[in-house]
Amino acid sequence: MSDNEEAEEVDEAEPAIELGEGPEVAGEPIARVASRLTWPAKRSDVVAQEGDAAVRSPDGPRDLDDVLADSEVPLFESRSEFVAEVEALVGRGPVATE
Image 1 (cartoon, rainbow, N blue to C red):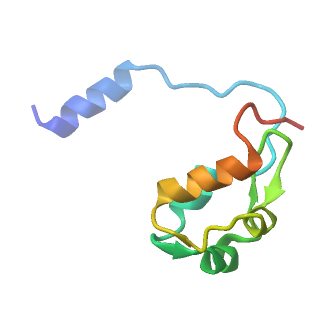
Image 2 (tube, rainbow, N blue to C red):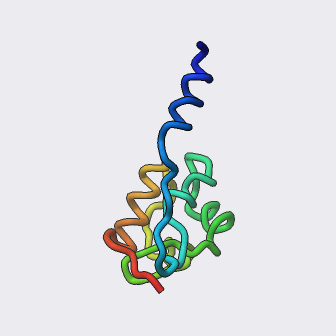
């Protein structure tokens, strides 16, 4: 039996995860926005490429260009540095739902 066949059997044996009912969450997770960028990245390049993206925060969605306007980091060396900076600026915690 090949590895692919074993993986298919495991997938079929496990039940699918169903999403619950409830209100939608506005904005995108910062990790999703970060995954579309390449590193290192200048703050100005991030704003040019993804500045219009609304990211999730505990206080509701915020435009990334507004968030990065408060940042003093000119160059994000890595994805994790970018995520940490944005989380420091918008906060971390439960996200408000509509």
